[in-house]
Image (cartoon, rainbow, N blue to C red; front, side, top):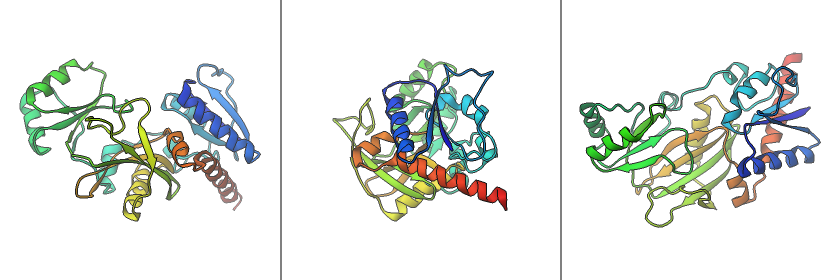
Length: 285
């Protein structure tokens, strides 16, 4: 049994994740294989087989991950076929009843449509979010139609944006889901006057447990994407209502692991080991 970790780059965050997974594998006597996409020979890729484990450390390594996946290889995807296709979060959440802020999934430059969308979201202010960025980057609180048009004009044509209702959030949490349970959770703490609680390279966080209802929502948000692991970002308004902002897969699980002391990397490895054993048993039947 080998654990293959595939990555695009080796920045500090990725290095922490890879080192934690390598240590977890070593403690469980699982051979760890570290694959960097810029260093592998795509004409001579490793041949993964039944019993092996595979995890994509960052989204930039998706191409390599999909070339390595084979039936019988344990991953955090529901099944082999799901691994080859990316679920779209907004419609998946809507179809599965995952609570989320009102969202316009495609933003136009047409002013009449923008005004209609803003009205549907409850009026200004609204949130404009550039997809694919982290730590609050690309998230704007927009107060007027003029400001909205100007911000859209500043974006490049290849940037995808969504528009959401503004919710005066009182809490923002990250819940780590493995399988059918929340294994760890943290709360982001706002700093200064910034409405974004997770802004900056090193957000302030603390360990926090949430209600069974909130944990059930986190599990549902991961299942809606046919995944078995994910970091679910949930916000809370002044009335205690909670909304899923997104499910991150892969996710930076080290922030929670360092804040709480929970061995998330170890739980990830153990889950894939158990899944691998089950896949082999099912094959033998």
